[in-house]
Picture 1 (cartoon, rainbow over the protein chains, first blue to last red):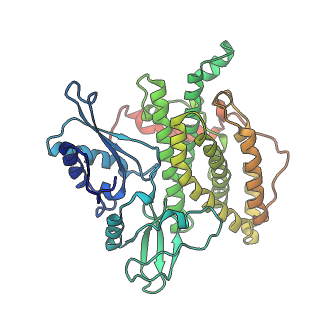
Picture 2: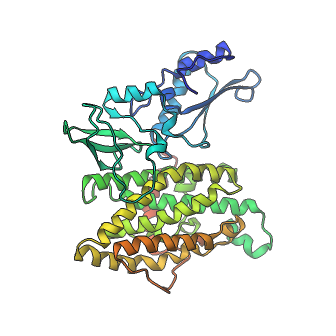
Picture 3: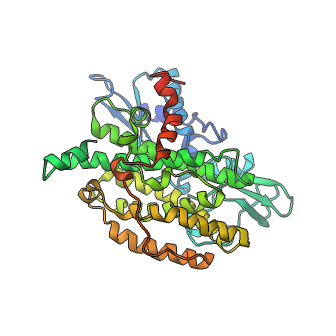
Length: 178
Length: 259
């Protein structure tokens, strides 16, 4: 799944599809492609999609159950492939295994930071259900300080929490660990 | 509904009817609570909490869509997630009574969310281990979100219960309002029994968890309260009719309307 790795033993046709998918971006966070997010789980050429010739099955997994961007992402995948002449494409949403921010690529995290959104901390360090837990140490994407505090666990979209930097005083979104 | 009528005319009904009924119960419960919470949009006490409750509403809506899609696939009669949400009648809805109650004040919305989320977390942990792979996948996904809901709502129950005299008294009043609807959570309907859901086990842990949070909130846990039930079998309070009137208005008035 990691788009930074060279694909080995992969057909040229499939590689072409992956490169088209790498142009599809998240409508809410347009600096991230769907490959950066790690939501494309599988790509398969299937005979029952357009029998008897076959077509491409793209398997994606939602970031959050209710994320309204998912419908749009599925549509954009079909559009991007159609523009390149792939008409017989079926996008299927798979729930298991459940998406985690650990699947976001390092390039993706870097792009998020450049965009002004603090990237998710590694999951193992911070996700817990303890009440009144101390805030995660989240680095300010603007001045790089760790002196930040959480304003709200819920932010402008399902995937973000709201933070403020105590050094530069700027509020910022944190792509919360999930 | 199918499963209720089957109960009377067949001693050993096929599991599939129960699977569908149970999936609809999960779908309806999450949809109706989502609808209730969304009423706070633009009305929350402060902006951050307004955003929090509507985010929770969105998570619940996503969960209900997954359940409705699965129910539609099980029915396999041309039903869709939309037809199941928008074109079924009040008696066909199998949601818990707790989630259809009016929001009341902020404390009541918070306490309802906490009592429900704590139950939902334990229930979904059981579904995650269950034999139905699709329900297990939906539950696994949802648990990540519910963990946030439990933490957020229990922190607020503690803040309000152990807050000012005003907030404490309001929480006492809210407990009186809501507690009689919590018994239904643990009274198994035929479809829950058929699906192998162990509500007694959930009840035990739920009671421990809620008692711990109430203790910290300096709130009493009511004992031996009358249990109001019926939602799981389609017998609802007056409130559900009002919710469905608003929720289903567009599709009832302009059948098949699309964005």
